[in-house]
Image (cartoon, rainbow, N blue to C red; front, side, top):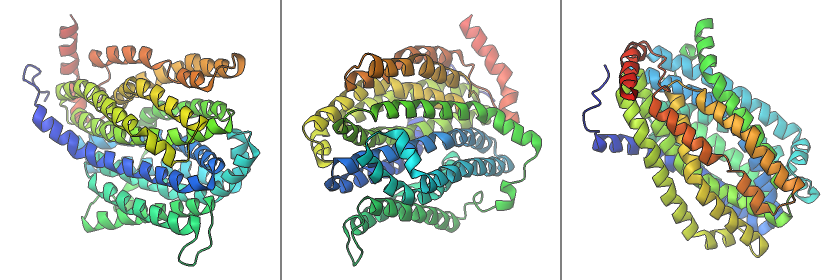
Length: 471
């Protein structure tokens, strides 16, 4: 049954549950991003060209992320709602579908990285020296993609069922292994030859394998049931597959179309001077810290709201969603201020100096101003998805990306020949307008669309209440 909206909001238990999910996930994501930052710092002595090449290779990884994240979001939608209604069969079936779809993307990108790295680097930059270094990295790191995505699929299941400690511990071990092997392989220790940037790729691949292994060991020790019932993962029928893809399709379209749009932006920025390319590579790593930190709250909101929707507690889901948007935006503002306070030693430690240091600082200032609104849009979209509405945020993101952001970026870069910082500002030009539209949709309550029988039974009563409030 729906809860009574006239009751005061239970802040204390809400914040405790939010922290119980958000903090471990945020810590896990920060560890993953820290590994990328450490890669950049340890490669930095090899020169700005190596740093730039590593950053461009990371953009290809980000494109893969966009390819599988739609299935990740769809998986969290179904698993969190089935978790709320206590339907084990739905949890296992949804995980199986999510795993198959995500691994298909991983195999595709892994093959491209291993067998066609020259083609990939030609897309991202016209600098031959940077391309040669990037090819060496991709040929090895492509083997890590399958294991990285497999870990993410398992994390989707574990997060959605509020078992966030397992992937967090696995990330701690994986990052430690990555850092140690970077030292061994990049510079040559313990009898190994110095491999340069190829050593960073090999260390990343080994760490990805360790991550998978640790998740399996910890899940087995805790007797976590859903991960090991392999036969149940693949017992689908046409109706179940259709329902999954109907809900996932808008998310997939959103992530793929946004990934392509972001690739165009990165290709445009990749035509800037080499100092700017190096600054972009470092900025993307630092941006990952903020996104990784924020993703913990995003995952928590998806679970806390989606679980209530699945359990039929629709009023509670609505009240939680409203508070999560402003709470998370405030946290991101504080995180940005902390990052900017230490930006000078961080940028210089990554071999940025002179023009590249100035460019990196400008990127951080622009991003700091834009990201509070940007993350507000993100948290609302993730909340809508977990509640069953994967269309509204998708349409807004795609329309604004292709009707406003890309035309402004391309025109400013290639027609107006604007400075790089002006081109960068254009990347966020749509965020304030989308925020207003997302807020209107949030308060309408129309984004609550259950997939469980319990949630559907409570839907009409909830909609009647919302109509009375609007009247």
